[in-house]
Image 1 (cartoon, rainbow, N blue to C red):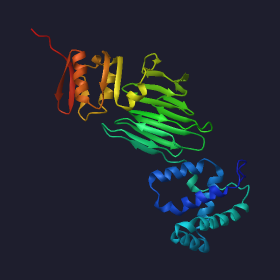
Image 2 (cartoon, rainbow, N blue to C red):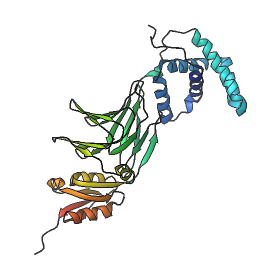
Image 3 (cartoon, one colour):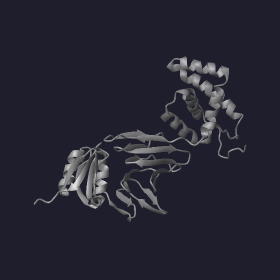
Image 4 (spheres, helix red, strand yellow):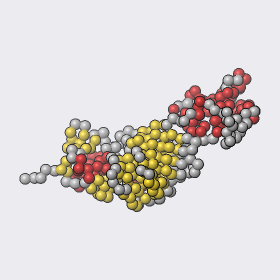
Length: 320
């Protein structure tokens, strides 16, 4: 096997961290396993350190030392840990320049995150980036050595990204890819469209072979079979999003309904799909869906009529 040109001897810190991961490997949760995989692929030296720590666990003397470590008082654990690390250093020295390959270096498995109808959750990732999921939304997170890839499979999410020029942060929503290095932005899948809003920094939005840069305070909506639409965000947009407010300014009804349906188990629908193009202007509290639906119906001279598990918006019949 050829030596890896980027290989370097693991540092004491990497060996100590690897020893801790190896010691807890059997008890890791799925989320912790994903964090371990992300840590491993970030640098070849980390993979080497972890492989060596796993190898030392097969040595009887070192296993006994590990047991003493588990039973030791808190004040003496660090010195015992460093003893195990020193054993790893000696083994590493004999393997300098050799690429170490183990099955655990396979492509990291994605971590699935999701919210229920009406709920909102915040998730801090291994690099301290934060994903805030709006109601009824889901993402798939896959961190690798060269990139941080997120797939927005449903709904709406805010991304507060830690800067790492060597590992771009990419969010895919259908055939749209949004790339950032360090910024705060939102990506939303709503009906047949994808909307991107940038609250800080700069992102690149790519779709169908074309790319566009968005800066702080800009938004862009990409809908099927329509030209892109964009503009400047209203003041207070960031706080409005975090507070579940929808500020609509000539927004098609179908997009308003799609957002409202993330907050109510009784979906709002239209018998006539062409009504979805009606324009809606107003400010609606999405986490109060019944109140918002009443306001929308009044604005458009429509009525909300329950039918089974759905509520249909229909035009009011003219009075005779």
